Length: 197
Image 1: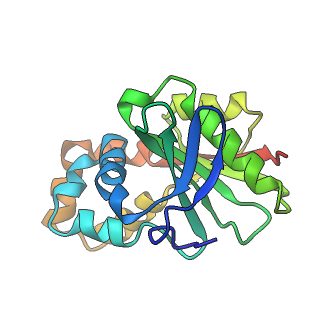
Image 2: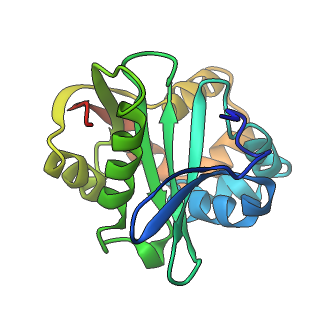
């Protein structure tokens, strides 16, 4: 499998309703829109070069990103991803366009991804890291049997905290009046979810 993803668009899994296929160049606009719609700080994407930098650094060496495509309409619904797949505790994630949320797509896509991956890989458990106030996603993984393990700072918070140690106006403008809320919003709940398959 092409772990870079953006070169192939290879189908990873499918069921009667959806296809999961690797992210490719033609998905750029949809992928970026999904990130913006679900971002706590959508203004970040208006900063010069930020959106392009994000796209160029989407797929890490140990990450697979799958577009969720509805079969009947051929509509892009969002994406799910598998990070640290070179370990026996891979991390799962999902992000849907607003119009496709709260329709059961998230659970169906995650289940399909986990079932397909577990069928050919040894998995002790899956990890899910979810923002503490994202009650919808927390409820989703809890319904799938996930158990809360701990809380931690998000990677975003760690990066911003580092920048704030030498603050400049760019970071202050991005956070704006939400700087106080930022501390709490960027705490993550870490879940462990049993292997499937």
